[in-house]
Image (cartoon, rainbow, N blue to C red; front, side, top):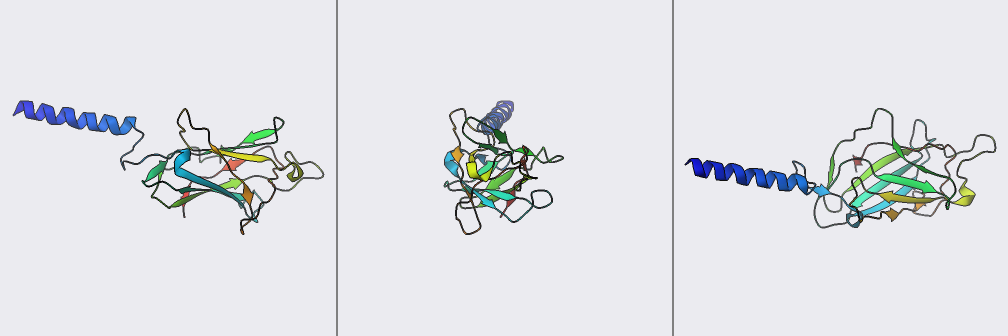
Amino acid sequence: MARRTVAVVVLGMALLTGAVACGGGRDGAAHCGTADLRWKATRTSGDGQEEPAAVLSATNKGGAPCALDGYPELDAHVGKAQGTTAKPQPGRETPDRVVLEPGETADFALFYDPKPDSDYCFMDGVLDPSLYVYPPHPAPDDHGTPAELTDAKGRHVPAQICGDDVRIGPARLR
């Protein structure tokens, strides 16, 4: 009887350790990787202060649930010149774990200044900065994916980031 109890405990610990090592949480979903996700950035009518200037969306295009357990890394840059990386909104540094079923989408609000003060803009829309997205907890060989900024109808709009600060809100399931 004692041997059986020990065997059950050892087996249970092995299964639990394997689930944690594979990135699974209590819900069993592994972390989403670039291969699992389709990213889309959509400009909104917000001013970037109270209302988001854009929304970054991640859709699970894989065949199994996956988890967004943190913030994606969003890099905006103009060639090798100026660039910025989105940081969590103050007070929201620890996001909730969001599990995406196949086909489900999560949205991240992006707060930045889309309009120049006077004549200055950190990344002017004329330069059309590039946007690049990495999933939370990327694998070492995960190189992320480019994301085009579009309007609500899916037409390309130049990314224009006038402040040097981009803040990202926590994931919200759509």
